[in-house]
Image 1 (cartoon, helix red, strand yellow):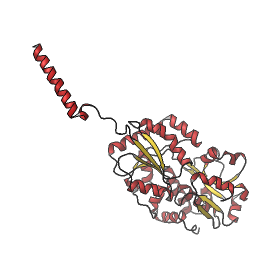
Image 2 (cartoon, rainbow, N blue to C red):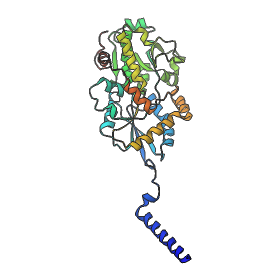
Image 3 (cartoon, rainbow, N blue to C red):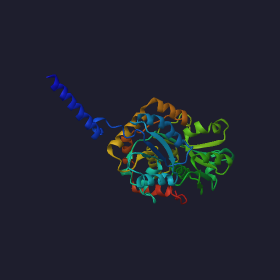
Image 4 (cartoon, one colour):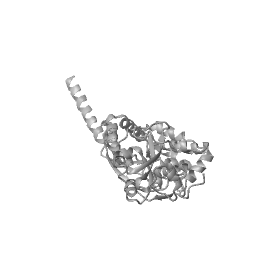
Length: 354
């Protein structure tokens, strides 16, 4: 009996060894797909601005929560209000889950507005959420320019307003401020990287700009401490969300003269709620999309991410989870008349008549 048992054991051992040699993946569990891999995050912006800092706050936690703990690197592809990067991710990036886009809200508005040069379909991206969904856009002018109030702004002509590329979210907001505040023939200089506009403002190359309230409190404290700029108005996203430092500023909607103008501001708020979208190219295998979406959810909920975000940006994170992100984009108002006016408002031509 013992000989029979020993024989069965040897045969079993031999078959096990043979199957291990012939079919190793069936015997041992496979290593996670992302183990030993490198993920590239393609930014639709230049490095150094607030958008870059938001991503940097997220990367260490994201690396921790992606099964396999891949290396994560950044690549920058500014241009066209994130249109260039979005087109690249849609048309050229491999669908292997190793390329993630992080773009401005401009990539959403460009697609909804049907702007030229948009070669991507929003509905075919997989969305991974955004690190923020609340935002406070402020219109400022250099103190030495002498525009201490809205009436002086309106009396001047040809105010120079600095911005990033046409279609970028801060460019759109600068145009919206100028239109609703009733500025005369403002000149928009959309030729700066995000971190370059503030020094250009202080050097007198431009007279004003639209910027984030959190960017001012973190990066431009001397503006507040030394009184280097005048603050004129704010756009609250969502409406009624008062910023602790700039809650006293008049909301831009208070300057609107018609329901149509109020709808314009509401449309910009809807675009801004989408934050800074993280996206995957079309065709990424479902299981990899789910791995990344789960990792982003865990990152957005981690107190360590919120602490680092606050440290780097000066603002509180207000994450939009992947499923909420897709919903926010689907629910953007698409009133044809408002869309048509908004397209003229945020284009490269002079502002439309009021």
